Image 1 (tube, rainbow, N blue to C red):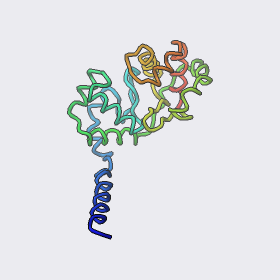
Image 2: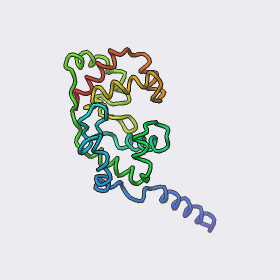
Image 3: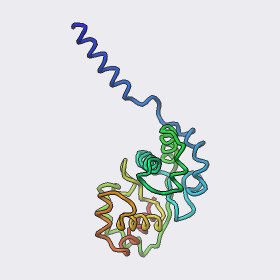
Image 4: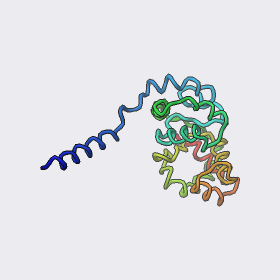
Length: 189
């Protein structure tokens, strides 16, 4: 092996090694950073107010994506944008690790609406999973507040929240569908 080949191999090795994360997300550091989040999202990410989502048990990758979207302004919410403005990428990773490590909640929902929503979930399972537990970049819907979920579906439908696939799905749903699906997801844990 000549020196050029050795240099190339060493360069490839170092490039691959540098792509690895320096350290795993720190759940304890995330817990420390989460104190301000509790006023809206509740202790340990279980919100007592249907206006704000439960974060407990949420997909870590989804949380990272959403926090970064708020930070860059690609997802618009003035309150969240001010909350994340000074977070580093490490802070975001740590917060996501903390909230995803918490046990998920069950928000409940109207049992009759939940029953009506169950047959409609097939279109959701491909991305959100059979139990609506989420799938990496796709959020956990199980245990989410029905009012919050219905509001997000409306936002996708009216275009105030952007996501090509969700906008296409929501466009084909009526408000009664929003409520039924949201009640069903809220009834899961």
